[in-house]
Amino acid sequence: MYALKPILKPVEVDLPSCMYSMKPVIGSASQQSASQNSNDQETLQLLAAKQDKVLKQLAELREQLVSMKTELNLCSKPAQPAAAGSSGPTPKSAAKVVSKPQKIEPINLSYLQDFVVNACPTNIPYGLLALKKLWINRLNLQVECFTHSTVPKLSEEALNFQKVITSLEPKIENLPRLKVTLIWKNVGTYTEMITSPTAYVPICGEVNILRFLSRCGPNEFNYERQDDLTEADSILDTCYLLINKQNVKDKKQVLKTLSSKLGKVSCFGGSGTISLCDIAATSAIKQVHQVLAKDINPNMAKLVTRVTAEIGA
Image 1 (spheres, rainbow, N blue to C red):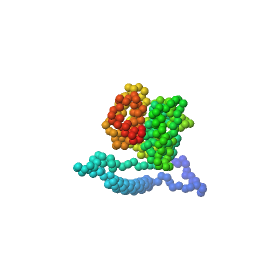
Image 2 (cartoon, rainbow, N blue to C red; image 1 turned 60 degrees about the vertical axis):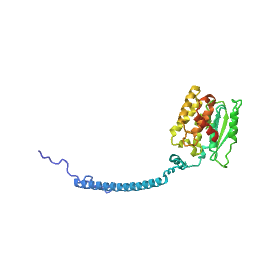
Image 3 (cartoon, one colour; image 1 turned 90 degrees about the horizontal axis):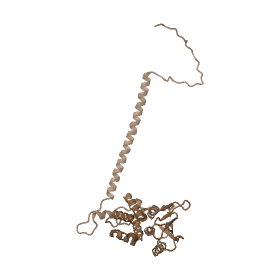
Image 4 (cartoon, helix red, strand yellow; image 1 turned 180 degrees about the vertical axis):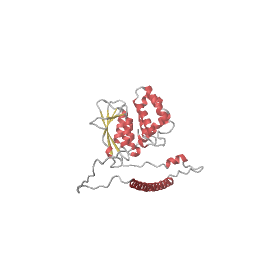
C-alpha cells in the first residue's frame, strides 16, 4: 500500500481551568472486566442477604401459625357425646349448643335517620312489628301512624296493628332510636319506604324494606351474616313475588316454591332461631291468606303461628 503523510499535525490545546476534568471513559478491556465482575459480586451478595432475611421471616411466621392453630384446636374441641341412657343432647345438637355466638357490636348511629313508609291497609307490613319486638332490648324502632286521604277507613286488622306497634315501648332507657313514619296510603301491594324526602328515592316492597332495616339495626340480626346468604336472598325474593304477583295461579306456584324451600324444618334458618326469612315469609303469607288459605301446607302454617306468637309478624 502507499504511505501517506499525516494530513493534520498534532495540535496542543490549552484547556481552561474552569472546566471539570474527567477520566477517560473507555479504559482497557481488563479494567472494564474487573469492574463488571466486582459489581456483579456485590449484587449477588445483596440478593443473598435479602433472601436469608425473607426466609427467616417466613420461618417465624410459620411458627406463629402453628402456635395459633394449636390454641384454636384446644379452644374448639367438639362436645363429647352423651352416655347411653342419659338425657343429654346428641352430638349434633351439642355442636349447636357450643357454637360461638355472633359478637355484638355498637349500632352505627349515622344509619338511624328518619324514614317514611307508605303501606296499604290491605297489605299490612307485619315485618315492622316483628323487627320492633326483635330489637326491643337493642334499638327503639319508634313508629308513628297517619292516614292518607286515599284511605277513607282503616280495617279492624289495620287498627289493631297500629295500636300494637305504637304502644309497644322498650323497657330499657336511652336506647338508640330509629323513627319510622307509617302512612296508610293506597299504594297496593308495593309498600314503599322513602329514605330521602328531597330526592324521593323509594325502596319498593316490604321484603326490600326489611333488607334495608336489617343492615341499619343491631348486627346480630343482620341477615347478611348468615352462613348461606345466597339461599337467604332466594327465600326473600320468593316472599317478594308471593306478595306482588297479581295472578292467583302465579301466587300458588310461588307459594309452592316457598314451601319446598322450608321443607320439613321448623324455620328457614334450620337452627330453631327465627330469622329475617321467617319474618318475611310470615308477613307475606298473612297478606295472601284470604286468596291462598287452602294452599298453605301444615308446616308453613306452623311457622306462621310460631312467628306470630313470638314476635308478632
